[in-house]
Length: 150
Image (tube, rainbow, N blue to C red; front, top):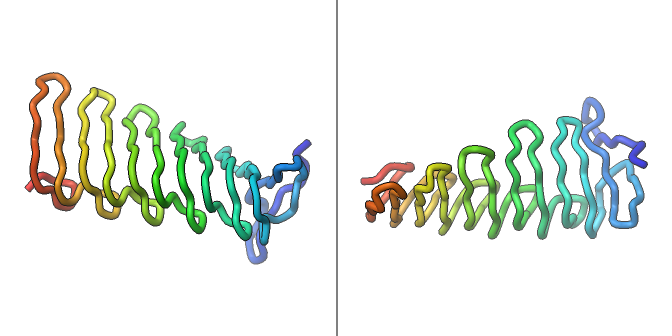
């Protein structure tokens, strides 16, 4: 069923298998618009929308190396817009993304049940936010910078 592996010009070898919504295996995603799946040689899988051959629109990306999964919006091959990332055994984030990083308003729930709800900048807690400790229900509310309470 999946027989052709694609490599873009200038690449050293196989990068992924591309299967479009008609179940046709293609040798490139370039210029493709619509739903498709990409099966990467490292075991990662993307299923979702493509625009001009790039991950753009809505899609799910499963990371084989660590079991993480992102379900949300994409732009120019990056997580961008609203999405949910489940970090295997590390928690989950639901909120805004920009250029592949947590950026804007979002909620991070840690494995122990603690929750941070607030603003993010380039992947770090930044701006106004609240951290709630599940065990004691104690709340820290304030201003964050570079991931730390100020």
